[in-house]
Image 1 (cartoon, rainbow, N blue to C red):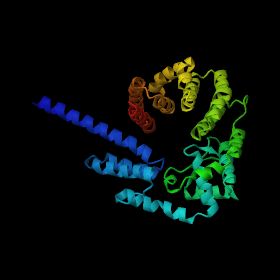
Image 2: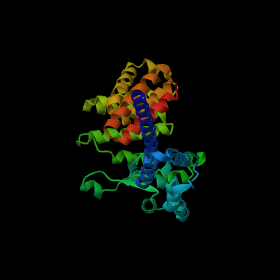
Image 3: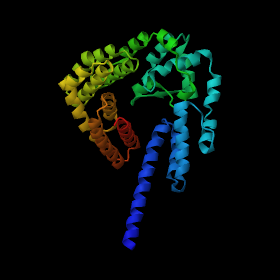
Image 4: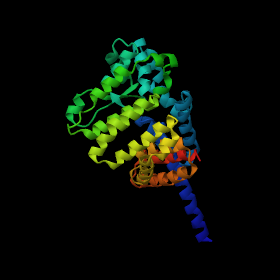
Amino acid sequence: MEARQGSRFAALNAELAERIDHLLERVTVAAGGNPGLHALLNRLTRQHASLHLADAAIAEVERYHLVHALPEQGEVGEFFRQLGLVTYLRALTSDELAQMRAALVFYPAQVPWAVMEAVGHAAGVDQPAAAMKRLLGLGCLDAFHSPGQAARDAPPKVAVNALAKPLYPPLTAAEDAHLDVKGALDAWYRQLPAFGTGHEHERTKGLGEIADFLFTRGELDDALQLQVEERLPLVLCLEDPIATCEIHLSCAAIRIAQGRMNEAMSHQATQDGLAAAIDLAKKLGYIHVASIVKVVKLLEQPAMAGTAVSYLHNAARHFRALESPRGRSGAAMSADSVRSTK
């Protein structure tokens, strides 16, 4: 009898731990990098007696990201009232608002200062640098400095703040069509370290970010050309098999998006890259998982999705052992994403 009760108690504890882990994974994403909101949602989640309240609070923040309705209830509602996002929105000048809306085309990427400034110029902002400084001061944009004193003295990379984003209307189709991003892309290329300077890994990462941006804007031919003609030769010189796999995956996704399914599937390098990258996912986790999910979802192959889900859950357990919430969340959420294709 006691053994049976002990077994039941252990099962309940395991179920509770799994539920808490799942809530913590949602907390990491919902908080959008805001330490105060993360601490609040984390505290609510770890109060085991009120997990339903934690679930409701997290869901309210998730709803804000999706439908842009500010949370109003309980501690989360109070947090957002004190955050003052609407007050800051109303305080912006027309130039600052235009800069913020133009910046949304890069979300969620961190882009060099000169790139964000160039897209402001393209949107008709008279003084984009001044607008960006004000937006940074208000928390609408986030700044990211590389390590080292020289890097800290240089202009930072800039990204749209995840909690501010839902309040700002994206560019309309007409506005986006008239937004000439060529100047911004030229500025982005100029910011990349040149080949032969000892910063080749940083260069290939930057080329990948530009290719991803082109992909999201539907400029598929340019994205594929950049991956094949510029990025792939560089990583082959670096003898970087992981980056090579990632590029093959990205190229497959682009070809599939172009409607060239047969070419993508018959390309042996793509098949090899996909198989190798899925195998690496259980060891390396979040960054490469994102590429795998992109391809698996586009291919919509149930058998492949099942394999990916298994490996992604292994990655989630790996990150849990390392006490890495970000990695665990990325792997677990990616597994849920892949499962939806089955």
